[in-house]
Image (cartoon, rainbow over all chains, first blue to last red; front, side, top):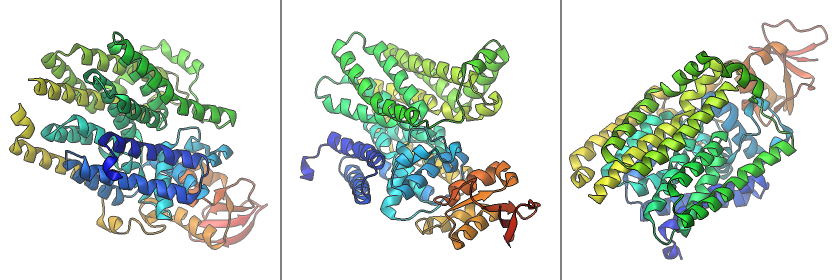
Length: 384
Length: 128
């Protein structure tokens, strides 16, 4: 039976077990189902890595980040106060629905919870809680996007992509925070979308993989939903002449956004609130002052990882001269950066204090610029 | 350029670079310890690396007294680290403002409407 599972089906099974785990916690399902689902995730991940993975270095890399994750304490503030606290709640309550009580508002109960649910799935399988291993559940969630990155790069190019990921995402691969996951699920999604250019037939499974990636991206953090919308706009700009592709992309995006819309409806209906709600008054108070723009610019864009990626992207664009990639990457990046400016201008918190998160929030775009530079160079060389 | 893609010398350089990047993340950006790795799956392990002694004491007391909910003083609530860490670390034991069992810092003056139940190294438990 296993012989009939193709590479694409295997990726779909891995992705669906991540989504199913979330659904099982949402519906307060039996613990045995949660455990079985997690075992399936591990089994099909190992099956994929040893049967289909062409870059065997990925196995070593995954092993290394899992070891680091298991050998470091969980001490990051957001990891403890938000993501792993949610995971602990889901583990002890066997359900996500307990957030309706709005206990411990500092943990932002209305944030989407697919990643904490996955960490809770691992803890359910192990059977007890501690302060070390549950964050490894979040590290395991890096496997699907790393498999996708590996599908698009071979040998030394793949090693460069891993080095770029380590440079930009760094400790966020293992420390229990979600910004690295957002960056990698986003980059995997946009690279799958862009690759539709090169596919002529049998792209049904590619659409399914894309939908699963976008669903997970939007259920990681609020930025994930914004990045989903940005990707949608960017892809329409390059595919607007291909009616068939456009139609399928529109369907994919609307299907993908349904779960996060349902989650938000659930939170609003149950009055599950966020302690930091951005508002129009703060926005109008800040919008006319140039110093606010300079401050946001400094924190958001004068970031060494973003600047490195931007320079690499500009150099590769001059060298490769790929107009589609230029339009695609620039439009998505600019829309997202514009969104971040609006969010920071309307924050109810002290602006400079809130901007401490800027270096984390810009990671998806920094990784996007670098990986697409590498992608365009890699594909140019292949055509030659 | 295909030679670049498959060049073994470049491959070795990249693998060494990745190795050092991982080493940097594990040791400089985070504090990797082999003793943590070895015990990483033990029940309740790891709190001593991330929690302060007063929060560890709070957990010990609530566990020994089999409390399902507890309350902390205004002063302890104002300490954001103590407040958030005690809530997430003690879960499923929950903080509840209506709970009579209130914990104070051992340096705090206990209000007159509270009866001291026990004094510990870092905390005082009172019924309020």
